[in-house]
Length: 426
Image: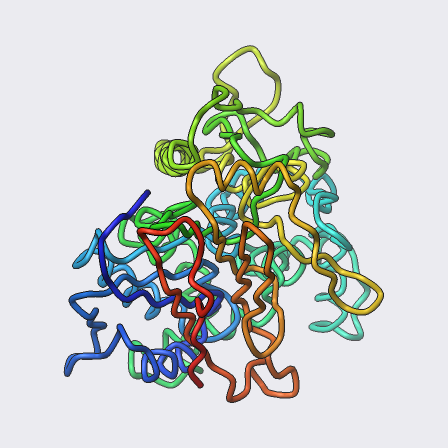
C-alpha cells in the first residue's frame, strides 16, 4: 500500500500488546487521535495514523483495542494503516491446534514440542507439571493426564510455552468480565477458551477482523513501515500463500533448512519497492482466504504426504525458522549481544534497493529498545525503532509512565528525510 499526499500529519505507535491504558495515554498526547463522547477514536482530517503491529497479548485490552482500531480503519480506510505483527498472525494457530482432531484425535505422546521455538516443551510435559500443581499428592499417570488434556489446558500450553503470553488467559477472563459487567469469578475457563477460538474462527472475531484490515507493509511518501526489518534475504521476496508452512505437525521441527527452500518467488529484476509491498499485502490476504476455507488440519491438495492447515503461510511468515530470515515481521535491526542489544548494520544492497524507489526511512517495531524510540542514522537511510514495551521493567506492565508518539516529518518532495523527523511527546 502506498500513499502520496501533499501535506498531512502522521502519528505512529506500535506494540501496544493488549495494554488499553497505555493506548489511552497515547491518545491523550496524540496530535492526530482523540476519543469522541461515545469512546470511539477520531482522526484529525489532515492526518494519517499508523499502528505498527502486535496489538494483542500482555494486558486485558485485546478485544477492545481491536474494536477501536478496526472501527477507525473502516471509517478512514485510506488514512489509517494497521500492520501485521507476530503477536497478531500467530493467533491463527488456535483453530487447528485446539481442534478435536489435534487434542483427541492423536495420542498425547505424539504431540511434539516445537523445536522451531527456543526452549519449547511438549504438551505432555506441560500437563505433567500442571498435574503436580493441581493434584500435589497424586501419582502422575495416563488416566490423570488424559483428564487434564482439555482444550483449555492445551490453550494454556500454547500461551505459556509457545506464544510468550503466560498471563493472557487470565487477562482475557478479566476483559470478558469488564465487557459483561460481571465479577471475573463468574467467567468460566470454557468461556475464556471459546473467546480465544472465536477471535480467529468468527468473521467478526477480534484477531481475524484485525488481520483482514491489516497490511504487511505500508509506504507513505519516502517512508516504509513494517513490523520487523528489511534484510538482504527478505527484500523482493514474496512467500507462497499456500505452500509456506510453520512447523512439521509430527515432529514440531522446521520444514525448511535454508532460505532457498522457503516457498515463494523473487520479483523480477528492476521491480520497485512499491510493487514488492503490494505483492506482500496480496500474499497476506490470500493466506487469510486459505485460512477461512479450512483453518484446521486437512490432507495436502497434491501428492505430498502429511497434513496442512489453512492460513499456515501467514503463521509461518512470523517465524524465523519457517522463513530462514525471508520475512519482514520478526527480522530486526538489533540483535542480542552480551551487552543486551547491538544494532545490526544495514546491508548496502538493502539501502540501494530502498533508495532506488525513493525510500529513505524505515519505521519498525517488534524489538524493544528502551523508554524512547531508537533512531539509527545512515548516510542514505534512517531507521526508527519504536517498540518501547519494556520501558520500565519494574512496573507491573513493563512500561511504567513512559509513553510516546512518533511523528515523522514527511518531506514528500525531497528524496531524503528532514533532519527533525521524530518528535517525542510524553
